[in-house]
Figure 1 (cartoon, protein in one colour):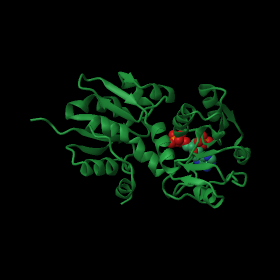
Figure 2 (tube, protein in one colour; figure 1 turned 90 degrees about the horizontal axis):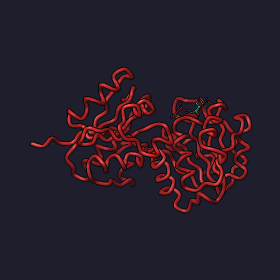
Figure 3 (spheres, helix red, strand yellow; figure 1 turned 30 degrees about the vertical axis):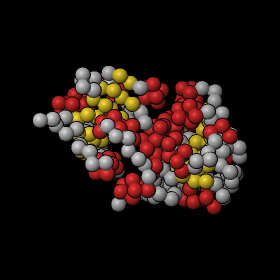
Figure 4 (tube, protein in one colour; figure 1 turned 90 degrees about the vertical axis):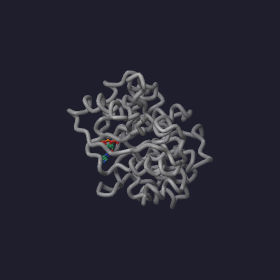
Length: 275
Ligand code: ATR
């Protein structure tokens, strides 16, 4: 008897993760054999867990905080984009026992942006990014790949933004956090990658007066779906794209690899995950 394929998401904590709902929805929608569960894994249990999952019938897992960097140590093969980003969010357990690590965060960001703003032109002008954490790293790699000519970056802790410039080169210009509002004048793509504006976090306070009305503006925060940052941009006439789609699209490549069907991200998917 063949076992049904298991997949899941590992993190610590993990109870807040929307991935089980997302993959559960897709499995049901396409009537596929398989399941997907949330697995709370402490840091000191990471290696042992990864080594034991394939024998339990797992074909792969998504990886969230705090394990995204650490999992690279245990991978036998790492995709180019995961190597560039220095972190992985999607592991596939190959039949020969090898672990393949990939990072689909940048892909998810880009697919969401293209779906939410079909007329967006990466080459139209500079992109402005608020924040320099792990999400910003993945987004910078994706934007550079898409042909964005310049990336203007600001982070409360400036050395983290400088470190990204050191890693990703002269296409990045760093602006001090106290002057972050000044990064907007030329920007045709504007992205919040900080946690500001998230439910329970502090509000996003950078002044947006200089925002161009033809800019495409997106936020990686998706709780609430319409952040005050996106609302302010919409009031100024910008096309805005919320952050939920990034989460949904980043799940696509893993699901396809594990369960053999490329799933769709549409209103039905959004409704299922938000229910
Ligand atoms: P992730 O890896 O998901 O991007 P992270 O590495 O914790 O998460 O990054 C969170 C981002 O939000 C960082 O850019 C952080 O700025 P610092 O590097 O200065 O910590 C930013 N951030 C969080 N709280 C903030 C605040 N109150 N003001 C400004 N930026 C904040």
